[in-house]
Image 1 (spheres, rainbow, N blue to C red):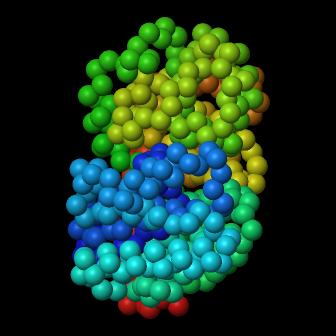
Image 2: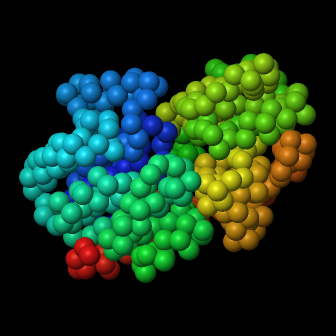
Image 3: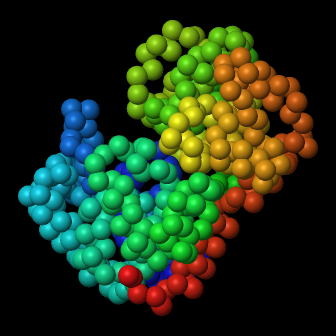
Length: 393
């Protein structure tokens, strides 16, 4: 892995949100000796009442209330742009660009490294403007999902296409995304979200007893880790919970939608978000890992990173038949149990637990090792090193 570079990461999420490739990749690059500016999302829509709590937290961070001890690594600077929350206003955009450009320029002067690399997760007018301003040595586009399906906002598709045209390299999270990105970026590669197997195994081994929230359970546990978002199939989850009253369904992650109609099911437990480093302590006590997603335009190209986190601890996985997981099964040999509908999904949960052997568990762990973050980052960095002499288009 290379070191000594200045890397500007334009993120789709804030650092404190659920742990995703945004944080994982940048943290590893910082640990390797690169200077990383992690620029939290500047937003793509006008602010709503539900956003004010996050806006206040960002204001505090921007005014210096974020303690140094909260910085994840000395080489990694988290930048929370204090911008006007009106992305479709020409005046606001002009002022916001000045704010962001000034902060980025100051960071570049401080780290004292020329020829920065821009690693963009977010396709937006601000991203394009920053690339134009910085004139980086290299632009990497990390395509984690179908932006037009996840964010039905005017202009997002146009911004994504323009970002791809300006990118030297693109890393796609699934085969459908790779096919799309290759229309614009010749040097595009498949890199599904990985897992730190050694870290997961080590943390799980330290958990000699179940976490308090799981300690009183008497039946088997079907668990989910990740955001409780609109792609989670609540009807499917409820049906499976009713079919399996002796099972406990544990949902770990920030709740981003209304789940009130499922609150009456006593065997579904909403634990909220937990720090990423604590997840292995919970997954260790899962009998089955769940990926109960709806099938729609967005999930048609989605690859859930939680898959390898379940497999890293030897857990069987039951998912709805996402196209990318169908492809994953072809590649790695039917490691994911795919099922549709509440009754079929419940049956797959039950049979996955009943059929699990030590040999199968070892196989799941081995598949996870083939998708380790260490291997992924090594190859990404090799590609960047090959492309480094090429100036940004």
